Image (cartoon, rainbow, N blue to C red; front, top):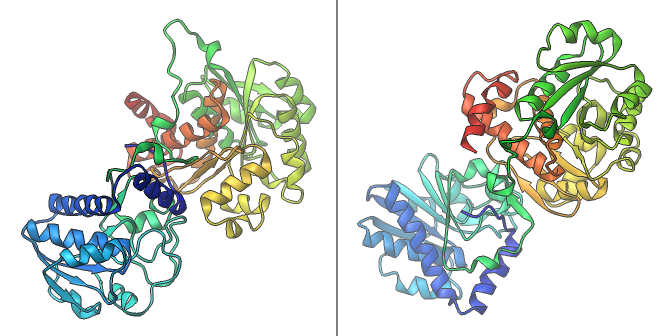
Length: 478
């Protein structure tokens, strides 16, 4: 399955492209309805079904579903309150079964509901009869066509107070951002992407689902050695703030960096030394000391920010790290220290930098952008362009964006990742991959996917320390 993601506008262009290439629009609608009916028949025994049809193409798909489910032995009623338009009218005329008014009463006796009210392009809240029926769904299982009605296809956000929650969503050709971004992803239930005859070349996009097909993990070469796999440095905080650096360092080592060192200020040497084995310890004092340490060009990747504290000293350390030319992951305090002058940070960045803010840190660097840019994916793209570096906005629906516009949505992170220190391990994964000479975007995308897959592999009870230790099992899958 392709990992391309299309916005609603891009999907409309893909439909138009297919028609221009000779695929009849009625054929696309028939194929879409058949895909939904087949998915339902594969998962549900014949039962009483109410198909809720809107007036547009989504409703047209619903009339096809109704006809085909009837052929599968389901007892089908169609509920609609407006005359179908265009192709949907043609499909409506082929439905010879029961019709009901679009009202809560249409759900009586139903054991399954098909949501064919509105597709991903809906731009207004559900209202009137449609809203009343959706509010009455309660616990009935719903199969949504394209996307649950009431959700914005480009953002995954509810358009109002009433939305459908589905157990299964069948969409066509490619996923939309709303299938992967929260809360849309949860409202979709299981997602099936069906081929309905649109040519693959119609998928013109720079937005992708983050899967292993998007990047290549740097497996060790038979004749390689540790120095081929880079040397990652993690900058430690003071004596009472050392754990974050060690978590990141362990992540960098597990993900394959050939050598990893913790750069430690003098007062933290003893506590770091007591906890490190395969990871080396390198003392430094202040920005000048870090600059001298990183002048050794064999140290080719650095994590800076976790546990450092917010203020001028951290800004100076960041400046030293960036001037060294080493690939850099900037996290936590390395970002917040520039909240009063983000451009001072952006002007220092280069093409081997990855910024890894959570939502609060993102707001400090890019104030208002999440509310202005038309959804999370577009906000991160705009942030990357503004910063001139890869930006990774952490969350259960992490988005990674390159300043050139390429972006990826990550959807494999389980809720258990919301635990102290998990972000530090992620920074280490990314830096360890940068040390192995992956590009900034690929390192960020690969590290994020591995992070989610490791958490999913471990299961309940996860703490940050578990992530590097379970990673080898995930790497076996690659």
